[in-house]
Length: 284
Image 1 (cartoon, rainbow, N blue to C red):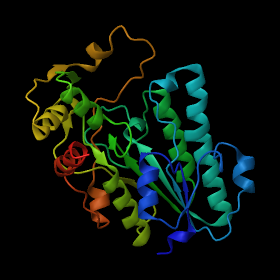
Image 2: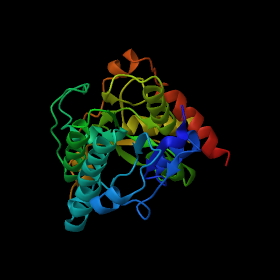
Image 3: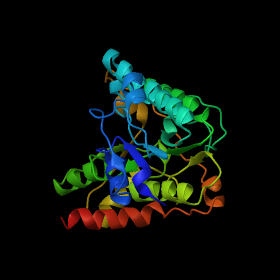
Image 4: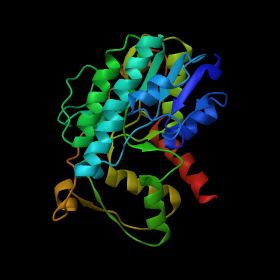
């Protein structure tokens, strides 16, 4: 597979950095070089010798999207940006790989399958759902729907490790259920689908393992890190009570992995990858 024909958007994000490591010859871009929300920027870009677009760009500030400015930014990148890439992919006969999220669902079903009707609760979720619809209209597409991503940036695991190192015993929500997705698994799923030329379409892509709450993940983090601290449970409603500008969260983020596994890719268990991630973080 010739990764020199890959174009990567959002190259400086958690997933983008991991994709750059996986595909060192890919053309890596950020919004300054290629503004996917601007059709003029997309249409005038040099698409010669590009066969595949890896779209890792996204507005991911879930609560920020609830503000007037954030709403505009989320729709520009997540919806219009995805639509622009789908349009150019169709015009140039390119394969488009696009990253989606559990937030396109309302969290009332378990687990979520790829063909479940979209039902976003938040502005962020709605903007991502609109992007999914646009990308899905392109014949040659892979949409990878994921959740609770952990990579080389600010993330939940690093936040909890920092609290544990300070001796802080946190209170964490226990009514949001799902699985972590380490970027290595997400990159592996992308590479598998593209390199094996799997059937185009939407695939759920997270780590496998028992779905658990954020509170239980925190307990696992503290156990693996050797922190003798108690983690208190709270509900999502209690945690955000009195706070303004908070986006509604799906309470069930568990994604069914059967389709991805049937395509020949079996993700690692989240607990195994979490253990390795913690060891790496503590040895820095």
